[in-house]
Length: 108
Image 1 (cartoon, rainbow, N blue to C red):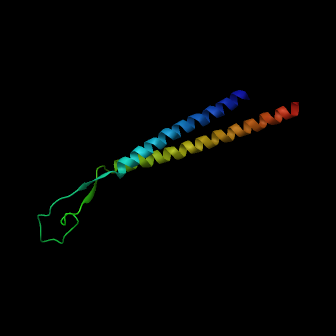
Image 2 (cartoon, helix red, strand yellow):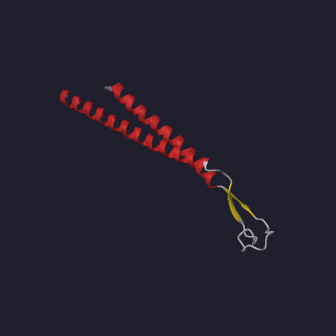
Image 3 (cartoon, rainbow, N blue to C red):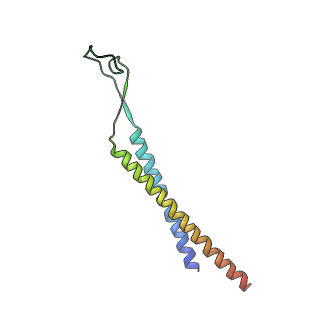
């Protein structure tokens, strides 16, 4: 019984560690995906209506591609999987603890 409690507790700790690592990676990826730089260009074509770039207004341009979003999505899926792993280990821990408690109550 004690070994089962140890296994469930270790599983919860590992799921928490992996979830924390994934959350850090999500923060990093979302920061990269949201980063942009301002590009101010002068217009050379006067026949088209003025755009933000033509008026000298700053234009936001993404510095990353769509690959960052797919990585971010994968990390979110992995985080959800770790959440389910943690919940399963917690449920096992509780059941084992309840069983052990009832065994001790019957003996006492």
